[in-house]
Length: 479
Image (cartoon, rainbow, N blue to C red):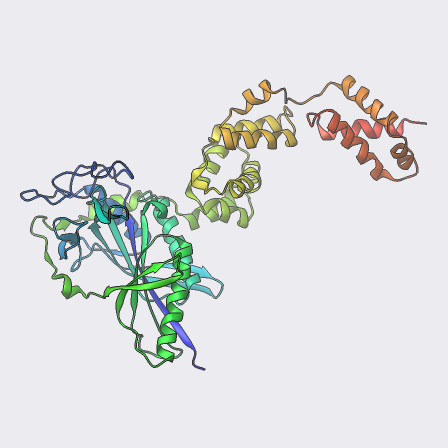
């Protein structure tokens, strides 16, 4: 039986985190009532003229530099002509001939080892609106709120060979863009969408097979399933003596299959020509240097710094830096309490446990660094023990309570009254003759029962170290 190799390239569309659209002053805020975030410019009314948002260019340059691209210092926009009802002016302003970023790449780490995925280009363009089909009225409605939201399209070379490599590449790309602050990359809101270009060929073949494109994939799960499904479909066609048709397909995750949408267009089908309403963009050396100077620390650099500066394990550093929000929370908390290992432990254990239980992403965490820092200081100052601290942290996580207030209001402070502890231990010793006998006969583990009962009687509010010390002292003093 023949063996086949999968060849995959991605076109990743990223909505930039500017406050206004690419060619007008309308808000880019997600949501809102249909057709309330638009104006004559972004809906393409006759007689209107676009004005380029400078921040879009700067965000794109930042992304290009982080992805090791060459910046095209004299670039321009082109018109991509096609008719879709969600783009009312019947063309999209994009970049074909002189894209702003070219010839980049990022290194990914997979089970097979390290490899570089080359980036062919990054270009700027405007987003289209959204079509919503109403099954009750059997009609399609158009929401133009998204029209004119600034996009960058990151086009990779066909360097990926498996779904695993694609997901690793997308995850690294997402983190780079989030750390740069150029996009929130929320796939559920359409801020990051991927088109999958996929073909198969016999192992060892030099020529690529016929590719298909699956449009606007907006979840990692759907992307993995779509790649596997399309790979199998193409192999089955080839094995049965049929040809793969170059076309655009739509992946239906519910049905676990893809459907043909239209024959795949080539660049000439769009009849590109230079955008006459926008002058070329001139990027000076000084402007480019200023963008380079303000490039932030990215995930890989941050991870190495955490290991060296804060002396935390590489695994912990990789998990914490795997979310910009989590990394920011870590650094801001450490800046307050100066206890990096404690902060790391709370994030790695209790925070991760609650995120999993609540089926949340780190970006949905609402508690503040001051709250976590205060909790750590209370434990360190023996105001509460760790058992109580875990209870308080869960309240902080779920309800955003202030730890000091919650402890005071619920009487959770540490009991350090020596007389009360001795009285309680004395009573438990009297009620536990078998444990006392076992301890006297050399079974030192029997002491644990008395310690446990004491902690239970104190409702977990005693210092376990002090309780252990007092129990041993009182058991040893028995004749």
